[in-house]
Length: 155
Picture 1: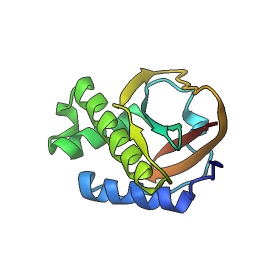
Picture 2 (picture 1 turned 180 degrees about the vertical axis):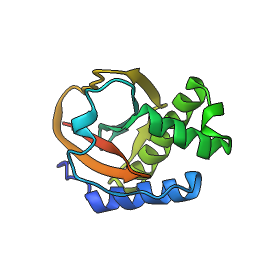
Picture 3 (picture 1 turned 90 degrees about the vertical axis):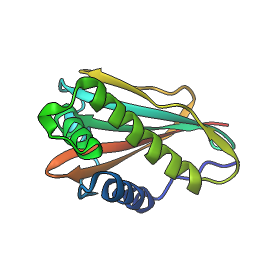
């Protein structure tokens, strides 16, 4: 099966729907490199799910810690200052799972979705073996840039 890029507009629409429904936070497209420029800074979170099957790859959400805190507060319906690091990581894991599952639903063929994993810190760089294409889709919510990365594997 030949790997085709996923339409960026489709990903933006999926993420916007998730942010509207789950977080009641606005989300809009930003520059492709907006989140990439900040990815080397400290205090970042990367949530990741892998998709295996007729289409193989990984979906990542890369966001600053402060946005993870805002998202956790919104998802849990508590003030941001009351959320723990575990709450933040669980929120980013759940967002990764929802975004990955939504993208999986528009892919051709049959595939399965892994459990989400989350890393926090600085210098985070996830690399999938046999990657033939990487898409970076820059997004912004409440003035904070983040990205959705899609890595495709050769099959």
